[in-house]
Each structure stands twice: as C-alpha cells, then as structure tokens.
Length: 183
Image (cartoon, rainbow, N blue to C red; front, side):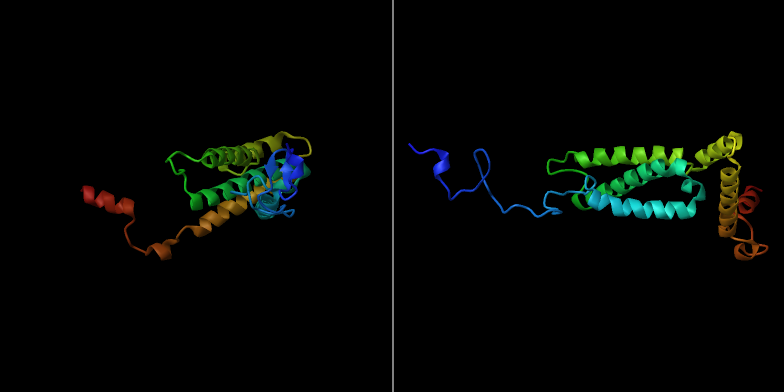
C-alpha cells in the first residue's frame, strides 16, 4: 500500500489538497469583488476625498479632526466602491435575494453619514460646530474660520439664485400667477 507522499506529480497546497493553479503574485485581485476590503483600492479614493474636503472645509485641517476626517473618507470610499460593484453586479443575486454587499453598503453609508454630521458637513451639524467652538477657550481661530466658511457658502448660494434680470422684469412669479388665477 502506498501512502499519499508517494505521488510527486501532484503538488500539495495543504494536507489532502492538490494545487489547482500557480501561486498568486502579491497584489493580485483574483478574489476581489468590490474592493472595499482592500486598502490598495479604497486608500487612494479616501486620500482624494480628504484633499477635496480639506479644500472646501478649512476647519477640518485642525489636528483634532484628523482621525475623524480619515474615518469618514474611508467609509465614504468603501461605500462608493461597493456601490459601483453593485451597479455592475446588481442588487440581487441569481436567486433574487439581496446581495450581502447591499447590506454592507447600507452600513457604510450610515457610518459615513454619522461621521459627516460629527464633522459639521451638513447644515445642522455645522451650526452645532459653530456653537461648540464659540464656547471653547482658544476656539476663536476655528470659530472665525467656520464663520468665514459660512459666509462663503451663503454668498455662493445667493450668487447661484437667478437675479431679476434673469427672471425677466415685470414677469409674474409663480406665486403671483397663482394669486391672479384665484381671482
């Protein structure tokens, strides 16, 4: 009786398993699906998100925000990678069941949203951040940066609204038109 060691033509990858392929090179993507678990995939996108957000929101450049900004960018990058994969693969599997990646995407979006709020990246959270910095000793610089950012946002939104010349002088607004119809 021969034991399994006497068959040299079958290279083994583990006890009782014959190799079915050559060993993979480092950095391969053979088993990758959406890439959200691969730092090689999500880190470059997260770094781009951080750079863009720091340009938009100067208060995030303070050292106290560094870890939260990085965590938000990672969650956002992973969510975008999973969303892109789900767009290609579909939300449902072959048996018409939701893919586990869809649940994972929901969790990533929820985490990114919580971190956006913490960082003051929505209107309500921004107001809370202003109030917090106003009460902190030494928070004047950050408070002024937040105020100037708020002014910039208000001015940008005001500039985006159509002026009287664009609406047409003398033209009725939708509200005025509704009132004249009611008469």
